[in-house]
Length: 218
Image (cartoon, rainbow, N blue to C red; front, top):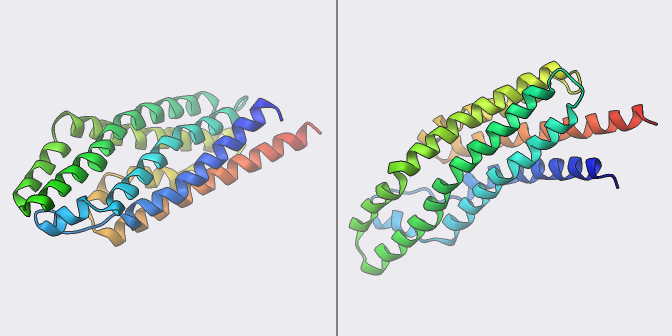
């Protein structure tokens, strides 16, 4: 199987796995009063770690999927734009992942210690884990990812290789990623579903463009 075809399959699979994990992350994540021992139990639960690892993997796989979109647009008017979309996605994800690491393992350790001491006072340390330089990096990452998704949507629109609207839902989901953090679980799960459908739409478009390219060369 040619390397280019293997890369396309890897990108499609990455987008589909990301789609599933973007829904599972908020669906499995425990939500609670994080200033109480109930919050400590949530932090210290296996569901906390598993859900956040799902979120980490979902973001980690995004650049692989976007790279496949970029490669599929070679020779079209959207090729250069798609490259910038891919590049900004890589940088954005790189800035986001350290924060998710702190959320996953730092808060898990704090929750375990708070339960051991039966003291909710330790939970104030969650603000330390979530703040500072890590929060700045996270914020920049959450600015770059929507920017990358908008650029990618424009590239897809201009390319003529995909349905024009193929990238719009993914871009909408990325643009809403920061605002959704201020809502409760049902809204966050719904947002995850929007991102998931956007990823699936991109994967379907990548499959269709690959199939179309294959037909042209037969």
